[in-house]
Image (tube, rainbow, N blue to C red):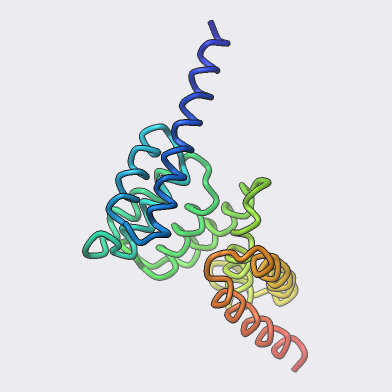
Length: 192
């Protein structure tokens, strides 16, 4: 009986992944309404990346006005499923006070959780997560100021930003610019 239950979950994962892919294609083509519907169907099958993508749709107002409450809800749902992308977006919500009261300690905890749940295949997120951790350590946001850890994380972020460039990942140019700027600031501060 347990074997049949496992097969059912595998099939549900496949269906959710199919809807996620359809939503991603619609999103790339600028059809945000269709992407929204596809992501909702994928989320119904438990796909945590679809839940996270719904958060992005609402956060950036892709289907009307931005709705930080809905974005926060979907990022939270995805984080409950262990999605590292959702953890760092929740960190951003607390860092910038989007829908919730700004709290650097909670933001730092979410960024740390994002790093701790990374899995094979999540390499496209490492630059963003490590950049945020480097910022926290460099500025003392939510943790002690630690230049050694700031440098460690920003060096890792640079490595993965380069990887993202090689793979043509979305928005790699802006990410790389922010990372390089922070790297220069950290090095300057450490050796001044």
